[in-house]
Image 1 (tube, helix red, strand yellow):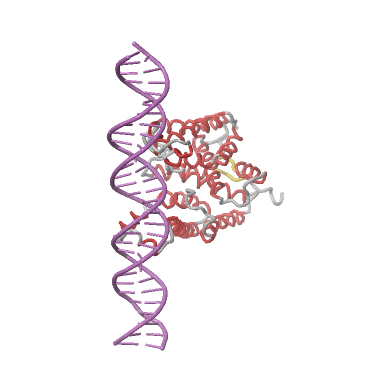
Image 2 (tube, rainbow over the protein chains, first blue to last red; image 1 turned 90 degrees about the horizontal axis):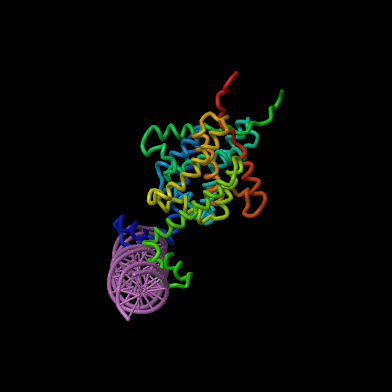
Length: 159
Length: 159
DNA sequence: AGCATAAGTTGACAATGACAACATCACGTT
DNA sequence: AACGTGATGTTGTCATTGTCAACTTATGCT
């Protein structure tokens, strides 16, 4: 795989080693790049649509997504990686906190994150045949699923 | 990896080829075994706790879980695999349908599945440092997250 | 006894990730 | 202009891996 990368770059094997100390380092760099793009995309979205943006990213760049979240690259290896990954999550928590109508913003954020993350994985793995590859059906499905949940409401401030 | 399996089994490389036509076939068989155990566990659980059981499975058998859902083994390869995988989902849909208080049982099931699936992945990947490895904190976290969502209610039957 | 089938073994091959040593080229400093 | 230094790339090699092929047992059936 490393060698094939080199081949496709029209360069001889071992050239990659001048840029990355190992295959895993290359992959980690790709993952970091992915997290950067991903974070940018997320931040450019507001509230409810963020979920759809999340899934869109996964579907448009399946390999990247799997690389980033597939467990091949361990998050702990590069602290920059971990920071990039947790950044988007913090943003989500902040968004929920700002809404103010949710009981536990942290938990709600974790749930929302889990939902879109799981949906992405399951769609990629083909576990939802209802949402066939290409079309508007899929987008509609995603919208329906992400819109199907409500978060436990905060206790009413004043009566 | 195949060779190491053979080594650990105290048998010479290529012995595995008497039982599986290829490395991928071995992995597919392991995934199928995983889905079987997984399905059994799910069916032995009722409604709300299913989610926790799902996550527990992932945390107890991370390798299996990743193998089953990690994309390495393509679901389409073995129809039995696909059937095993979709079985649990159908059960979930049925459970939601039986509840009767949800607008769209199919969508709710997809959302619930996505939630626990994503939560499993994120926990395994270490994206939720709040839930540290061992303890009750983690179980509590899982309970909170899975309990944080409500599903869009069905329109009231009669006024 | 004879033999077919399953299970395992050794030997080989191409491909891969990694290492080492050598080559080239662009520079900044003197 | 000459030199050295660092980055980039190359060839050669090594152990390891997945896979194929051919040979060897061993087990059980007729």
